[in-house]
Amino acid sequence: MTIQSHIKAKPVRITGLGAVTPFGDTVEHFWESIVVGKDAFKPITLFSVKDHRTQIASEIGKSDFYTPSRVETDILSRADSMALAAAEEALKQACLLDPATKNVFYPERTGIIVGTAAGGILGLEQFFRNRKQKQLVGSARSLLSSFCLSSIATNIAREFSIKGQRMTMATVCSSSGLALAAAKEIMEAGELDYVLVVGAESLSEVTHAGFNILRSVAPEYCQPFDANRKGLVLGEGAGHWLQARHIRKAIGIHRTGPGAQGPGRRGIQEMRGLLHQGGELHRRPPDTDVRDGPLLQHQFQGGPYRAPDHRSRAAYLGGCPEQDNRFRGCRRWVWSPVLPCREKEELP
Image (cartoon, rainbow, N blue to C red; front, side):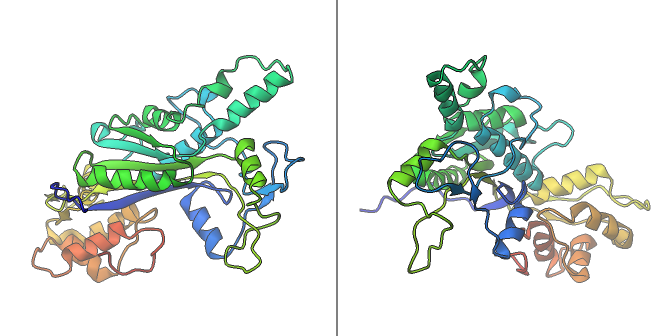
């Protein structure tokens, strides 16, 4: 039996990505490493593995992932810190984060959905290890505050002033898949305009020991497509994307002037906002295109953006609705993603 929804689905798009991995603290570091076939397998140092069948994992060799401005540092778990760093990258890439205040631009219409299996369990393990060994470690606040699985979403919301819906999916291996599915349903229903979908996990002794008991961990490296494969290798990190509702009707004319500097800061901000709603932009007068071009290219180049050929850029700037590729060129410039299709000429 098929249940059909009466809610008309609204198209969505991915406008920002964020990642913290053993290869580095950005999506670009992650992509550059995997396309050349690097691996991140190394001996585990976060906890003792002397009694485990295997001793390697994809561990991140640092602990200072993010310096918060609103959340107390001593309550953050390792997973929280990784999640905050990746969240900042995704929000910045989507141009949804005010650089002056570090608040999202549309707090009530922005939500967070987290997929995690164990969250801040690493701190809980240390707490009970210290207790068993009768070690005095002062306040247990730093080890226990973020054990609750919902702490990742809560801390991201506090740090970036996000006031929309928050959910946490904790169904072990299917957590991230369910988070993506929930985000899609919420966006299609029009309940939010932006959803930050979060995946964050740290290595932990409980998880690693469990997979060792199952004998499903490879002793050296994973080789999933090899006839002699011996299992997987566990890892840690954070991977986020910012999902935005596509509003095709947004149309605007940015404030430009005949001055040599072209469009000012306000004009740039308006263009970014409208383009991230899927809107069209036409500017006037067209005789300032030569002056506007270099400034716009400087403002929109980098991150998730890629400037197209001059013809498309001229169409975008020309202010002539009759030009066939005016919006296609604009969309191709602003929405061309970093991963995984950087060479695609157009988006569907």
